[in-house]
Amino acid sequence: MIKIIDYKAGNAPSVMHAVTRLGYEAEYARCQHCIADATHIILPGVGSAKATMDSLREMDLIHSLEDAVMRKSVFFLGICVGLQILFEHSEEENTDCLGWLKGRVVKFDTSNVRVPQMGWNQVRFMKNAPFRTEDEYFYFVNSYYAKPEDDSDIWGVSEYGIRFTAAVNKDNIYAAQFHAEKSGEAGLTLLNGFLGLGNGG
Image 1 (cartoon, rainbow, N blue to C red):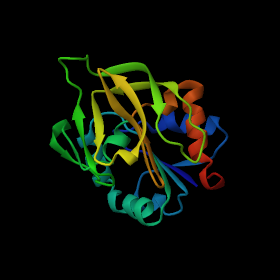
Image 2 (tube, one colour):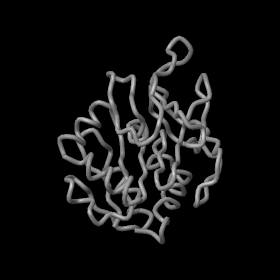
Image 3 (cartoon, rainbow, N blue to C red):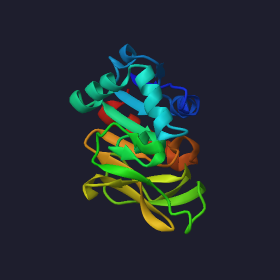
């Protein structure tokens, strides 16, 4: 079963709409027991890393997510802030994050670019996923970006003043800084590929 984490800092309804448009059934997950039968977990993100981490703690979801993703290898997709909190630390409000991936999240240099980055930007995929990904334009809204410690975790990159990490992948963990659910056909193609892993949810 596909589970979409629904928390107050998230964007779950938009993601649900995209998933059901692709013909999949999904459920919202709002407590630790809700992901027990998950085959795929999507963690949308809107807002700050701190607000997201606080919401996950309030819902008592952090341990259950870690057990599902890191121990049971359930397929995971993080979106926007859902990518950033995968790392150890974010400069945004000096926030300790999940630490599933080594690295940190930093703010764009505001002397060089306007923040937030808001709009369409091209992503170049650096390595092949088990599903089709092609260089396309996706929709971004972000002031911060991830700096993975391990370059092999970088799935895709984009340019905004500098080259930055736009997507990451390690084993069963996938995440995109861009909003796949708001990125038209390119975003739906990526979502469909993720949801088809393991023969779908």
